[in-house]
Length: 305
Length: 305
Ligand SMILES: Nc1ncnc2c1ncn2[C@@H]1O[C@H](COP(=O)(O)O)[C@@H](O)[C@H]1O
Ligand SMILES: Nc1ncnc2c1ncn2[C@@H]1O[C@H](COP(=O)(O)O)[C@@H](O)[C@H]1O
Ligand SMILES: [Mg+2]
Ligand SMILES: [Mg+2]
Image (cartoon, rainbow over all chains, first blue to last red; front, side, top):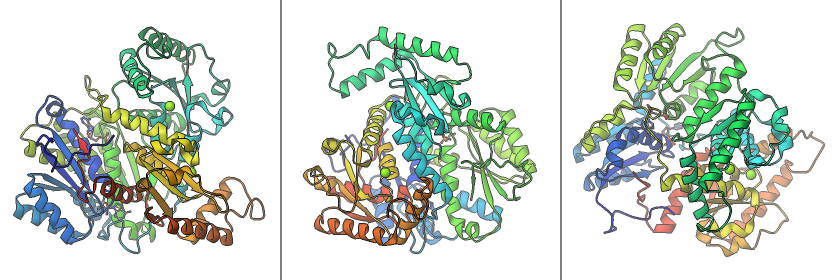
């Protein structure tokens, strides 16, 4: 379950704190900070002092902002922010300076660059500002449809719909098909995933659909076993109970079985997912997909605004 | 389906182009650019010239980088990048300068701030670098479990599991329950969503689970009708066919029915979702959730690294 430690909690090891402040959802600040923290893994993993993040979303008035800056000062935190209103952003910068809090504006540099490129001024309105509306574009409907399709098609369900999918993902249990499919769905792709189980024939439809849209996942047997053991624990199995699902011999045999199928279907790109985050795997798939469907290694226009 | 227009396509209206370049998945650059573009909606919607984005992911060598810069110069594009390797990032900056391409480094300012805060140097290694591995943390397993749970519980399925959910979302058809649930799942929350259908009693279990974790969605009837009409089109219905699903009278009655239920269950926060993006709705829910579960309006530590 989620961490419930608060800074008031005595048991909390005093660590470094990164405050993320947004007048919106905080997603942009969160992703930027997560990416940047990737650059300090050597420190974070090898037991430097712990680093915590705190997300303050929906911050659109000066009082609340100043409270946060003052708290950051008390806790010796750093503050990363995205604030659309230039006055509020300037206040954040100045308040941080006078309270001795190190701060970085994530939004302004890109906004300024785009403003000068387009030759127009930013609105200064945060996304939640009164009167502003998230528009119901075709893109919006496409994404909703993709998410609903992908949920329905999870784990080999409704195989008669496989031809409606933009992308089909095949792999053994615990190779990460579901989270990958969902991630791609949020980008607007209808994804179906099909499990590969040793000794069970793959559905005929998988070989009947456009083979250029099928992608295979493989991973390291030792890592797969680790993931399956964790899964078995979650399901409440004990070592001596249940199937041979997480037995090393079985894991290897199942991966061999999958790899033989992949070898017989050389059109399917085989993606080694070990040690890769979902968004990295998705990026690889989309590069190949684009190349295959449009014969172009230069990215097509990903979006028209 | 996806836009297949390329810049070689004669039918494409010449527009402004934003190139996004990453040695990783490109997610950080994409989200930052999307947020920044929100500041130019007045221009984008009111028929300024069209703005396109192109995502170049997995760019980790100088040759490929230079190709992209040169192409950006030809197309009069702007270039937004995240490159972990300082040399490559410097090359990007210099190449853009000498080719007259406006550019912004999204990663470096935050990385520099964190480096000086922690007092250590960034690794300079992109996430896909050889030897680097995405670690299988508890957080990772928690997310996977949350995604699988949430997929299974979509649309009122397996109501006997409602007590296992961290968050339960209730609302009428097309109020956006599924995409919202999936988004929260990716943040590690087990979410179940329960549809409200006029004339159909809500499941008993919904009233038996911890009421502090139930959230209600409502929206503007006119917008809901628009969404339902789009849905009906997608399902191939014609005006005179099918149910009264998208009829204005029915839409209003169903929302009234839902709102009466909400009034009888005052513990459930009612979230007006009209015109809000999924991540904004999620941010509102998580603020209330945190407050309710931990009695704190100061965000708890969202993550320990
Ligand atoms: N559609 C939008 N319109 C205006 N501003 C936006 C939009 N989307 C995001 N932003 C701004 O971009 C920053 C990051 O948003 P968020 O990722 O929701 O925290 C915030 O300052 C938002 O106000
Ligand atoms: N775990 C990580 N370790 C090292 N660098 C990372 C990590 N995650 C993201 N990055 C870097 O952050 C930038 C944005 O990543 P992405 O969002 O995948 O494009 C890229 O330059 C990545 O190399
Ligand atoms: Mg699965
Ligand atoms: Mg739904």
